[in-house]
Image (cartoon, rainbow, N blue to C red; front, side, top):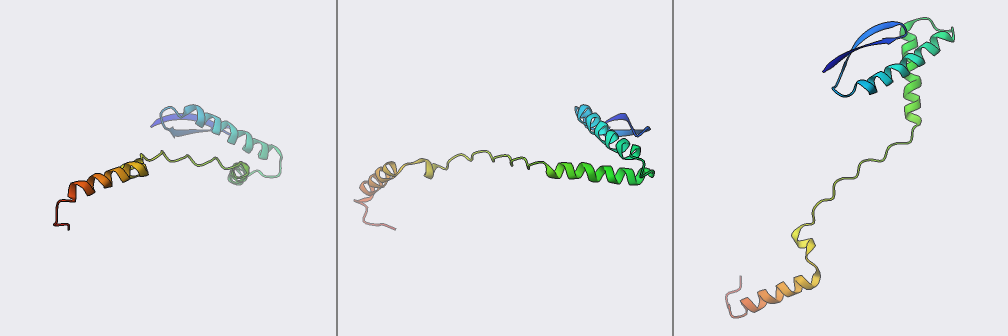
Length: 108
């Protein structure tokens, strides 16, 4: 896992990031930093922890408002041999079996 250095509300943090996820993490950090700085700059709240909680709630609320992404469709299952055979083919196979077994007097 790759480590990247980020700054949130003027404080530096070293965060773990999966390979190839740096850009997405940087975008998330920028969004969080903007949200936290906006709350701080509004002047009502000074404690970093409270600012972080309010920012997290604001961002979670925005995510909850988004329409849910459609669930990925499951891969089509291959048809079984029985369902791939149409009714006329099935009738033909039954006729062949009947003819093959008609002289056999010992049916199970």
